[in-house]
Image 1 (tube, rainbow, N blue to C red):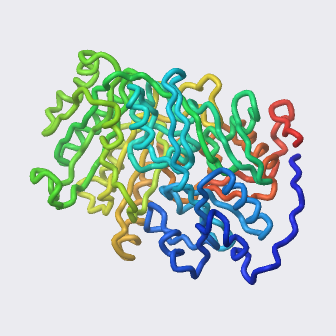
Image 2: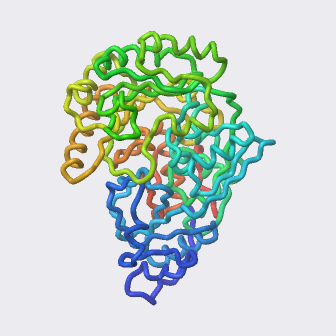
Length: 481
C-alpha cells in the first residue's frame, strides 16, 4: 500500500486556503478576493462553483506545490481545464480548484507521429499543430474542449468507428501524484497507473501533460445533411438502421435541433426545428458517396458532405464555444428500435413542446469502439449502438427548472434501451461503475486506493478509494513505493 510522508499542519492562517497564497506566482484566488468570482466560473456557466480557492499553476512544479500545500492544509484538489463537466464535482467548500489554463505547450513529432500537449491545451490548438504535418488527432466535436479531460474519459470523435477512442492512443501521461511526486506513466513505467488513467478520469493524480498518437487520414468526406423536423420519424428510422450496418469508415451523429433566430444563421433555417446528420467518412471519395447513399436518397434540404481538411472538423458539429449555461442528460443505448424512436419523438420531437433546444442527439457507435483495443486502458471499448445526449439552455431559473425536467423525462423515456454511461457526456452525478466492465471497475478501485488512499483528488466522476475484496491479487498487486 502507498505510504505518504507526514506533513506538519499549516498554522499561519485563519482559513486553510490562506496557506496557498503566494503559490503559482500569486495566481491563487481565495474566496473573497477580487478575481475569485471570475476564476471559479466553469465552461458550463449554469454551475455555481464555490471552491475554497482557485489556483492557476503554469508548470508541473507549481502543480506539485499546490498539491503538497493543499494536503498540508487539509484541503482536497480538483483538477479542471475548461470546466465542461463540472456539475458532478458537487460541493467544493474544502477543495482547491486547480485550473490548468496556463499550461499551453504543444509539440508534434512528425517522425513518430506523436504529439505532446500540456494540461491546458484545447483541441483546436492540438489539431492545428498536427495539421502542419498533414496529421490528424482523435479530437471530439468541439474546438474548445480540453485535450486532457477528454482523453482521460475516453474520447470519441469523427474517426472513432475506424480508429477507436482517443484514450487508447495515449502513449504517456505525466502527472503529479497525491504525495507531490512528478511521475511519467507508460506501458513500461507505472503500467497499472497508465492503464487506469486511460479511461478512468481524473481520479489518480493531476495530469500535467499527455503524449498520444496522430494519424494520417487524408481528406475525409465530411459535412452535414439537413431535413425539416416534420421528417424526423422517417430520417430517424433510416439513420438508425443504416448506422447499425455501415462500414467502420463512417462516424456520424443525428440531432434534433431548434435553430435560434440569430442574424448569423441562414434565413432559411432561423427559428426552425430541424434534423441534422453530420459526420465524416474516411477513405476513397466514391466509396464514401456509396456509404452515404441511403441517407442522401432521403433528399435533404442541405447536403454539404464533401472532401474536407481534417483541421476543419473540430467545428463541423457547431457546438457552442465559450462559457455556455445549460442542463443536460445522457446515456449509452444498446439499441434504438422503432419503439425507442417513437419514445424519443414523443418527449423531444417537434410536437412535444420540449425545451431541449440545444439538441437531442444520438452518436453512432460500433466498429472499433465495440472491439477491445489491444493494450487499451480502463475504458477499452463502449457497449452500445449509440450514445444519447440532450441539453437545454439555462437563461434564468425558470428555464433551468423546466430544462432539467425535460432532460430527466427524455432520459427516462429511453431507459428501456440503456446499457450504461459514457462519463464524458454525463453532466450530473451518476453511478460511475456503469461505465466499465465489472473487472475493470474493481481494478480501478484497487489502483485508486493504492495511489490516493485518502481521497485527496476530487474527480467529476469518482472512483472509490476503498480496496474491493473482489479484486484478485493475481490481477492487480499495488506497488510498494
